[in-house]
Amino acid sequence: MATALEQACADGLAAVRAREASLEAFRLIAPVIKLWDGNIGLQHVVRCENEYDWLDNENDTGKGTIKVDTDYEEGQYLWDIKGRRDRGETIDVLVTVDYVGRRWSGFLDEVTIDTNDLGQTIVTADFLSDYEQLKWRHLWATPSTPAGFQPFKTFMLGGPTDWSLGTALKLNLARAHGRPSGMGWMDPLADGAADYREWPIVLAPLDYETAATRGTVTGLVLSRFKTWHEAAEAMLDDADITVRWRRYMPGDALPWPGAQVSYGTLVVWFENNSGGLTSNTTGSFFGGIAQLVRIFVSSAVEGLGGGSLPIDNSEEAIVGIPSVPEYQVPGYLGTEPKGTYVFYPAGSPGVVMQKAKVKLARGRRLTGGGHSMPMVNELISAAVQAIGDALAAIPLAPIPPLGGVADALLAPFYEDTILAFMTVYLVNRAAYLSHFSLYEMWVDGADQAYTLSATLVLREVVRATETKYSADMEIIDGAPWYVGAKGYGHFDLGNRIFVQTEGDRSGRIESPRVKSLRLSAAVGKAPGFGIKLGSKDPVDAFGRVIKRIQKLASGLKAMGMI
Image (tube, rainbow, N blue to C red; front, side, top):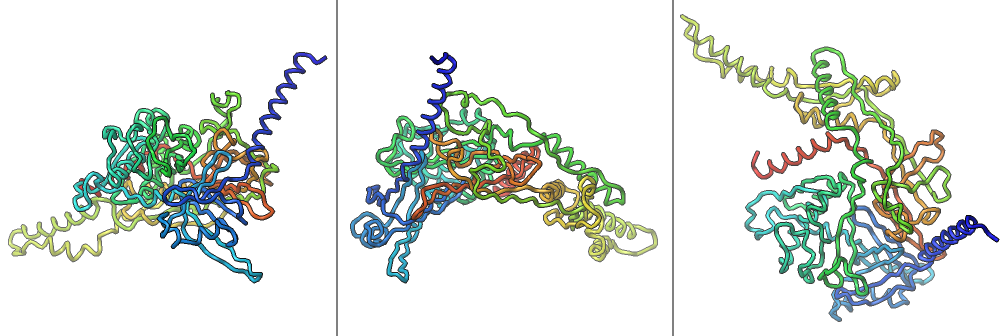
């Protein structure tokens, strides 16, 4: 007779096996591919495809492809543009692909018919994912007025990145499709009770207070008729936010409780994958100021023939993983940005292909400039004019004031000759470069020497030319980790995972984010995911603040305020 401990272990093992079986069962259900007309009428559930490929890029448009024999109705429907128009279905074809809790949706872009040497004719339909819709939505300078009257030169809205981007998009959707009854103006994004049945795109409700308290990076939306994607791209990357979108179709649950939306509506929301900036922000604001001062002083000392100060960036090891309450809930499945746990060690059977790259640091010295620092040319000009005019005051010397003439003649010889260039010698970097390493790099963009902008450019180049590590991997779904939406998989698009580089004996662990997911299948090939991982350089706190200041200044300049 089994003891209580043995029975408990057996029950636990049975529960684990049952859980694994349920996850595998989801993968045994083939992706459901549906073709819809422009009126959201279901035309075909595709079951006769030869091949398909659905690419989902983080915060960008992905391409989908499906190949079908012309013998099948699906192939004829995809090719028959005129027939769809004549039947009143519109020429548009929408597609939804449902698999492991995820939905890829998009619209038909182009259709090709190919006939091979065996007489087999194939229809190839190419789709663009619905993220493309956000590239065709512009943020007007003044979205509340007609195009002919735009009193504000630039649209500007600050706040938590997800809230400010969502609000900007919603205001311009209201411009294009009319403000529905019940939509508020004080916090438009918070209103989920208004009637949005006439809108093709809606934003999931998000009030300012919630956005401000959940650790989202503050951002500033600036647009003078940019597309939403153009205005949002850098902000999303800066804040590690993933745009989520899902087309609401017949049979789906409401996007949020009480939502008033029509079938076919594209619902957009935002997921914060920054983990409260813990994995992406390094250093402190004052540490960044200290490095900026060192670069400025070092370049000034070098410019006067002196020595150099140590300038370099360093890494800080992160020990341990923070406690995540969600992971303590039995049955929870998914990755929380507060703590990554998915890990692919070197030699993992789940890794099909891995390509890692290290780009070595280059350059001992950085030099830039071309124009003298502010007030240098002006002071020399004032001195020349003062001397020229002073000669006219000499008694018994009938000389007219020649200060302006002298300045005009001498200006080409003195302008941009004093404090017009700045150079920084990278002492720390030079310590680990050989005598034969590349020596000096000219820095474009640091045009006026000894200014804040020039020093910032030099500082960015210091970071950009340091040693860089990057990696690209393809991973098998379910070996051992599953890809899928929360509740269906361990991680999804935008989540961060841990990986080791195959062949690296040091055991270094990288933490890139999932940048794209590609669901594909072909004859003799079961559905599976191809996964691309990518890392971005850590952004220090000071650099983040300065970028926002520069963006604000750019917006104020566009508005004519400075």
